Every structure is written in C-alpha cells, then in structure tokens.
Length: 315
Ligand code: SF4
Ligand code: SF4
Image (cartoon, rainbow, N blue to C red; front, side):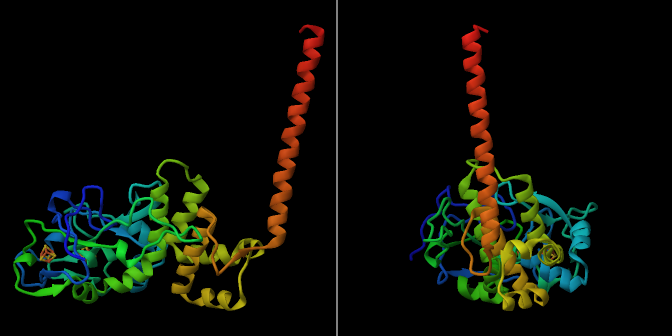
C-alpha cells in the first residue's frame, strides 16, 4: 500500500491524546520508513511524559501491578483516575498526573521508572495506529473484523519532540518490534474489539449500569474478576471446561483473555469457545420471560374487561 492522505474521519485508536494538527496527514504501512530516535541524550528527554492522557488497557494494569507488587484496587486508587474509552460510555482508567507538575507519576529526570512495563500508549508514541473502521465489518459470529488490511499508521510530530531530528531510520514494523508494541497489540486485541464494537453502536443502545460496572471490574481488577468467577454463582450459570478452569485459577493472562470472552458474551451476545450458558439456566430464563409475558397478557385482558364494563355502565 502506498502512503495516502489520512482522512479527517479516521481517528487515533487510543494512546496519548494529542492535537490532531500534529498528526502527519499520511497513512503509513508496516513497510513505511520513519526517521526517529528517542534516548536520554535528547534535549527534550521526558518532555512527552506530562500533561497527557494515557489510557490503560487491562494488560497494562496487569503488568504495572506485577511490577509494583500492588493489588489492582490499590494501584487504581493511587495512580489512576476514571475516564471513558474512545468516546463511548465504557468506563476505564487513565494515569492520574501528579498534582504538583502535571506529569506522569512514574517520570523522573532520569527517565521512566517503569520503562520495561510502560503502558501501550507510551510504546506507540510517536507512531499512532488508526481507528478500526467505525461500525466496521463483522464476521459470521458478529465479531468486528480487525484484519491487517484495516490497520494503518501515522506519525505524530510535536514541535517539542526532537527525536524526529535524529538520524536513525527504520520501518514502522521495526519501530513497533523495538518498542514491544506487537506483543501489546496481541494482548489488547480482544478488549479493544469490545470498545470499538461499543463505539460502532453509537448512542443507539445504552449500556446498563450493571453492564458498565462489570466491564470496569473485569477490565481493571483481575483479582476481583477471579473472585467473581470462583466465589459467585458464575459457574452455576456458565459451563466452563475443567482444563480452562484450571488455567484461569492460576494464570492471570489466561484469566484476562477469559474475561474478554465473558464481556463479549454478556455485553454483545457473542458466541465464545470458553464458556456456554448452562441449558437449565436458559430454560429458567425462558420460563421467566414467558411468565412475564403471561402476566402482561392477563393484565391487558383485565384492562379490556374493565373498559367494557365502563362502556356498559356508561361510566
Ligand atoms: S509510564 Fe513512563 S514512558 Fe509512560 S508517560 Fe509515564 S514516565 Fe513516560
Ligand atoms: S524525543 Fe520525543 S519521545 Fe523522546 S523524550 Fe523527547 S519528546 Fe519524548
């Protein structure tokens, strides 16, 4: 694909929110070449780590809580603040900038203190990835298609960032591999698909408060989600294979992927391979719906009879 001009409808997927006028109006591919280098010797070192909105993905939170050896709820309280994801009503978190200097809580004059576990958004910079098509294509199961050909990249060039003046040249693919973006993309893919799917719904359907709470809990606190799976009636409602249960008991990454499946199923009714609603629960639900319907039919009949009575008596 040749480099083409970015349309104003195509927006940043997520990441450091930036003034759109700093986005180079060129669509880049994995093979496009960029000239950029960031290192402690640049005069602007850490200038990009303040006054910025850094949204955290579930994998970002998992990696940071492991590094800091902090439970998620404590991490969320100390280092984050709530936000909405990608102009949807889906709740998420972003770094809370320090009150004294409006900078990231992990930046020091010597650089980032969590560098090898820095969030996805920090790894992307200054190469952004464009939005998946809004209301994009869907596969047979109704899942958003996020095929390679629907992705493209662009360069963010801010005046203060001197990395663009360095003489290192690489392809977008090389830059992304160097920054560990590919691994993050793989980890974030299913979760981002949920957010993009919600975005494609626009305001047509509102998400219940309970659904929003569930999305937030599963996306930000895996310890809480694990307790929900093993200490609530979850396993009486869903059938989950023994080997999957064993995996998610001890493996946080497996649990995270499982939580994405759960959200896809519960928020969008997607069929997922890791869990199915138990037959008896479906039957119970059908009986409950039918009872509600019967009730409303009876009520309608009663109201009709009442109306007839009134007509006869001239009331
Ligand atoms: S996490 Fe590190 S790289 Fe990201 S904004 Fe904070 S200090 Fe900068
Ligand atoms: S070169 Fe750019 S990315 Fe690197 S520290 Fe400076 S402003 Fe940040």
